[in-house]
Amino acid sequence: MAAGRNYQRKGDPFTLKVQRGEGPPCVQRWERQGTGRVYFTRVPVHRCSVVRVEMLAQAVREHTARAGELHPQPVNPEQLAGVLVFDWTPSAARVRVLPSSTALPRPGTVRLTLSTSRTGRGGVGVRFWVVCPRCSRPCGAVYASTWGAAGRLDAEQHVTGCRACLGLTDESQQRHKCLDWAGAVDGSRKYAPDRLGWYRPRSPYTVARAAYVFRASCARALPGFFEKSQR
Image (tube, one colour):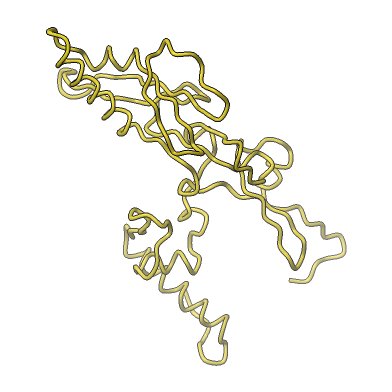
């Protein structure tokens, strides 16, 4: 589209927010080679290191079983979770279980703790939560990103926190209604490299939209062979 006389490029709202210093603590910085335009995007969750509460809860249960073998009285998992800490080293993908009286970890290591809540009918069950080291809220997972607030990659420094604190996103949200999104809908590709990377369409509209994206992409690439797709 031709630019008007008083046309000024303002950029997308998220990039402007990051440039004002109001963005999340970790973003990705991109630059188009043809135009030199700089823009920012959120960091996808599958590009971050993660520690899930299921792994930490399993460690607590194993320590509870070992303590029950050594002590005649039964050990409460809730009490044991309150006296244990977990030192997580994202660069080495290692988690150590230590007593809460252990000295503070060295740089590059994040100390995590667990909290519990009652669940089930009558509150007979126990649910574990990992406490976010940034906002201190209970969450299901803590992430570590090597991208900082300036959008540059730094393998030595990790920004840690829950998904809400770091402003993380899914690749399916960033690439929604694009050609690779359409390929993930019909099962020809995956978003993430792990086994949970498949996109599951929730409605017939999603499948129809993916087919439209395919037809429109073919029409733009080969206009002489494909007609312009109609919605």
